[in-house]
Length: 442
Image (tube, rainbow, N blue to C red):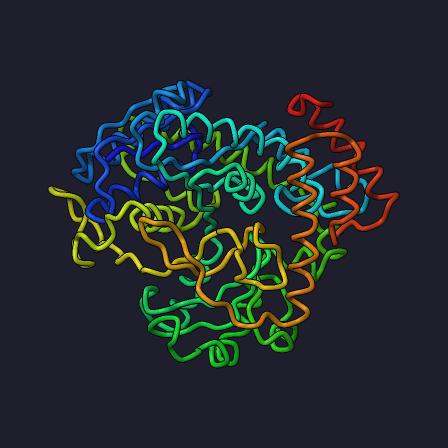
C-alpha cells in the first residue's frame, strides 16, 4: 500500500512517520512518498523518516520527490499538509490584522481568510493531479483552514475528508484527567473546524453515560487553564469549547496580548531551524522531543486511524498487536475506533446549515467514506455562531475560487470578528498587499 504526503518536507512529517511505524499493522504501508518543492528540507526530513522506520523494523520504502505526479501515482491515500507561502506568509497573517484592531491568527479572522485565498487553488490543483493518476485515492486534508479547504475539495467532486487534531487532543486530555484509556471516551464534538464544543464526554461509545458534568466539577480549573478561559465561563456554558473559541469569547483580551508578544510564526520558524538541524544528524532515529512544541499533537494517531478506516485496513491486527513485524519494542497499536471526529459535508447533520457546508462532527468511517452520526440539538448561542461563521466560509470560498477585491471585502465584512465596514476595507487592502505574490488576480 502506497501513501503519499504532499508537503512531505514539513517538520511535522516525522510525527506522522513515527505513527506509521508504530501502527504498522493497522495501516500496512509498503511505500511512503514524500513530495515537496523544497528539496533541501525534503532530504533532511526524508532521511530521518527512513531512520525512524528502520529503527522500528518497518519495511516501507521511502521515496523523496518534487514531482507530484510521481508521488501520487498508485497511492491509496494522499495526505495534504500544505503551507503556501511558508512561515513568512504566516507571519503576515498574524501581524497585519492587529493594525486594524483584529485578531492576528493563521486560521481565524482576516489571517485565516488570507490563508484560504492562498491555499484553496493550490489544494485543488493537487487534487486534480491525484484524481488523474490515482482516481480511487482518498485525500485526507490536514491543511488549514481545514473546513474551507475540504469544502472546496468536496464541491469539486474529490474523495476527501478533512482532519484536525483538536478533538483527539481533548480526548487525550480528558482520558488523562479521568485515568481512562482514550479509546474508552467518545466525544459529542460538534460545530465547524476550529469552532467546536464538547457537548458530552461519553464512556464506552456514542450511547454511553455522559461524564462531562463530573469532569467539569472535578477538573474544571485544569481544563479552563488549558483553554485559557475563566473557570466560571465553563460552568456557565456547561460544555467545553475548543481553545479557538477564545478568539471569540475574549477577542479584545487576545488582541492586547498579541500586540505585546512576538508572533507565533517567528517562534515556529526558529523552532523549525533547530528541528532541521536535528534531522540532519545521522544518529537521530526518532522524533525529537522538541517536535511536540511545534504543534500537531496526536496528528499521527488521528491520520493513521482515519486512513486505516477509509482504506479498509482497520482492525486487521485484532486491536492488540504491537508495531510492525520485527519492530524493536514499539507501543501497543491503538485500536481504530469506528467513529472518528472528521470534517465532512453537512447533509442535514446540523439542520440549520446548508447541506454543502462542511462540519466537524463524529462520523462512522468506512471504506465508503465518513457518515456523520445524528447530532443532538446545538444550543442557540452555539448554533448562531456556527451559522454566522458558515456564512463567512461560503463567501471566503467564493473569494478563493473567483478572486476580486469585492469578494474579499464581502467575506471580511461577514466575519463575526470583523463585521464593521471600515475595518473590512482596511483589512482588504492589507490582505491584498501582503499576499499579492500568491493571488494571480491581484
